[in-house]
Image (cartoon, rainbow, N blue to C red):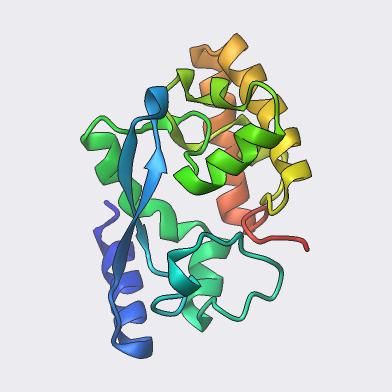
Length: 179
């Protein structure tokens, strides 16, 4: 069903600059176990200097022309379906973060690591209720949504998140940093 979209996105990325189509990045998962997440590449090759994690920001010069569109409609997340098949992620749950960013956030935000008591997801309560986070304050707010989800997790909440995600994808909202 998704193969035409996957092929079109892949071809567009390759045509743009000849670089890699998919990249993988280390993320914290269930019980803080590290795994590799797969994404369509939306930034220039080697976008992070010295392998140092940096949050994306509004008008980020590292994002490619194609990357702006695939991020807006969250097509860059589609390869994470592989992570679901491997059992590393679920469709719904708190978004996994990079270990070095998590280390910083856990030192700044009380109870931050509680978000890894459930399997991370492609979409979550925080993603459908708060825009792209690019600061410690954003992470605090998003954690409150993640903790709400963990405490109230059920099939009905998952369905609400699923349909809100579809709406956001169609509307192209919430995937780009505001500042």
